[in-house]
Length: 334
Ligand code: SF4
Image (cartoon, rainbow, N blue to C red; front, side):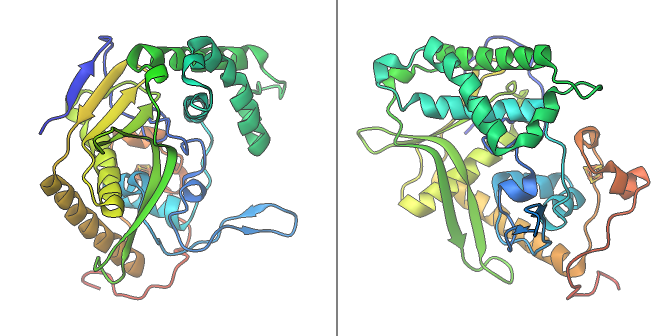
């Protein structure tokens, strides 16, 4: 079954950029911390500073699974070493827009209007800034002064994305069953240990018939058809988890691209979700093997241009930090 384009504003599509165009609710957070994909929560230092404790991977989210498929070394840097990454204006805007679309449903249906939604943008930004003061640096000039113009432009861009949503969906006619839903399930018998799958689903709609629709907002543009597999993988991941949790295959997966005004839908069937489960089991086995051997290969692609870790990547002349976990299995051929 192919993914279908329901609506297109005709803008040129482009491949999604990890952590930038996805705009997921957790996108502005550091990957290692935001998705809690490893055992051992970051400890608090005496001075209150956040300390990142290296730990074995304990779970898979769609983003981290995609990281491993894209570049195993990137996965290591994010999940095991938990190397810090610079916040980006685009990902932070995605977080704000997601918060607005979630909060809007607190209002009675008739009051879910574009002006109300746009009016939520500054407040959601202020809330995010209060939780993560370092984001102020996104709007600080080279002289260290606050750049009010840059912030105003950024907020206006966020408002435009929110406004575009109303051309794609009508929130006065929607009553989501869940918003920003945390899901987690355990797949037994994957590798040496059970595999925990987890993530956040932007919205779950349930029809009177019981049919389930999973909705994900993207603040970037819809990818060209040849680049849709990653977005589709994320959605089938969520469909698998929800199926395992609720015993019913979601009827529809829906991606709402606010950057380009596109809605892509996909209707999964059980056999496809079983194939996704097999793929995730194989992926987890590969991750466990790399964890045990310490062998995390770099896989350079054009997406390296967006990688924060070039300075410690052998492909760019760097040296990774010492592997922080015990080697419990020999390297292949070693
Ligand atoms: S620079 Fe490229 S090859 Fe190196 S870790 Fe980042 S994504 Fe992987």
